[in-house]
Amino acid sequence: MADYLRRVIFNLWYYRRPPWDSGITPPELMEFISSNPPARALDLGCGTGTNVLTLAQHGWQVTGIDYAPKAISIARRKIQSANISANLYVGDVTRLDGIDGPFEFVLDLGCFHGLTDSEKKSYLAQLQKVCAPNGNWFLYGFFRVSGAIPGPGLVPQDIDQIQVCFKLVSQKDGLDRRDRPSAYFLFRKY
Image 1 (cartoon, helix red, strand yellow):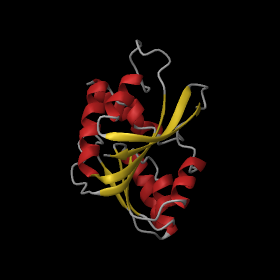
Image 2: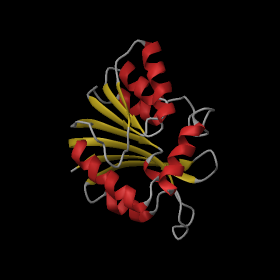
Image 3: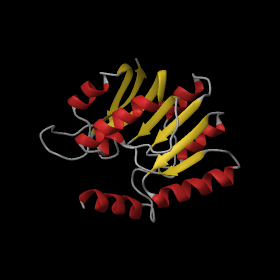
Image 4: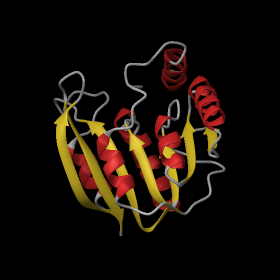
């Protein structure tokens, strides 16, 4: 029941403007795009498609997935208005049903850090399946202030778990809009 309620609440946020949906592609992602040739990309938790649109406009073949139907509806309108091609799905990032890899680039700007521990394990198993060998995973997330308090956010154990299959290439630390410690990570699949 809690998972269902969480999904309903996320979907309802998209009838207004969710605080996490800035509509702006971050400079950290733009830097990655400008220094890597276009290939196949997957945006996990793509929301309203801001970064799907940006990647597609730069020549990438992009697939986006989000579990909020309203977000995907908005993303489809953006893609259609821009007259570009991208695949968008309403779905679960812990199951990726119907999403065929491999993808040379996987993007997650704020999805992974909102998952439960068991969902993070499932997500990482799916990520390993769809990410190409030596593929890049670009992750943004905020850190949980105290690892002992349950709730959203990254904890050191998450980074340890990721590094079993992905090498940390770079990390840029900062603060999110609520002054929580956060970071942009670039991982590469072993």
